Length: 331
Image (tube, rainbow, N blue to C red):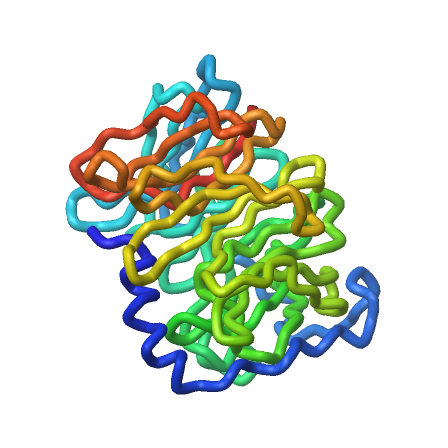
């Protein structure tokens, strides 16, 4: 299987023909008090027909990781302990799933698969958020990159077409849709990430000729670029203390990707993973001691873990299919 870097490479030929979009439009009202109800209050997630509990895992690794695996000719979401034990499939009631993201309390996972879905880990119930892509409120055809706010009340996601789009918010009960940007240049591989206090979002955008990492307030205001190089920076993830960002530097010509670490102001940049291969989608553990990521260094895409300083890199999964898009969950 190819990584998303191969897909992005082809898409960049198209992107060079299109100018960079303008900055996003800030929200006109504070986030908690807004009454911009673009969906009716009665719109609630639609439950799946059947549900069975997904037992919480435990292991010596200190956490549980959700990831995507390509097995039996379809994409499915699995759980695995941070020590590599106890693999368990989550998406048993829907066709498949991509890009899992945990709620802060570790009880639910939001993911995308032809829409946005929420899996309740305790009950096994899988519900779909009632959002319709391609509508007047969500004009582009795909809903991707969901990310749960630290207080559990909001879900950020990308409404995109091809490789770019705009960032939106919706409450976790499926109401109160809000648009944060109006630039159509947010990268499909932006890994929308909340700051620990829920006041900011980090993302990647294709502006000024390449993809860079940006941060903005949670109402869409004060967009700032954190990186400024001639390469492409993707997949940002904020540390639990909000002081550092782990991200990937991608070379679309050699199909290699480094995982790097920098301070939130862009200083102190160092390399964590560079194996002459693709190393990407790095995500922090909730205690800040470990980072989980995907890599094809052994010939197939698998999920790996390392300490926050880049040491002790080891593989967690070993399957014939593609494994990746990891997300760190409960301790």
